[in-house]
Image (tube, rainbow, N blue to C red):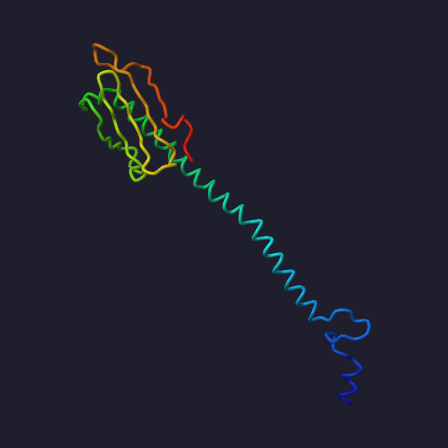
Length: 162
């Protein structure tokens, strides 16, 4: 068999010749450039989505923290309104709730007792952790009992801060 004759009768597909257009090597290079451009476009499109999801996750954590803090503040106010408030003297005191131990690293609970009302607060440790939560119970004058109407407010306008 004649090798040179065989090589000339069947030219390599990557070699340019009449009617062959661009060679296979050029097509492969174009394919790589096309792949790099497609990957860049995909990353450019997904980057804002990932950042949005991360920000939303932070917001959902703040809302969850605020909901748990509200539950603890409401429960502690009920306990204090049942008569435990008499154990506290007038003024502001630190409150260590039994049910809010998981929130201790995220903020502090305070109770304010004066002649007319009891106020329970949760103050977040960091800004944008849902805002301060305040609940107040009014003390009936004369007998030292708590009025049935318990009012609540948030110092950040009632909506969780972001």
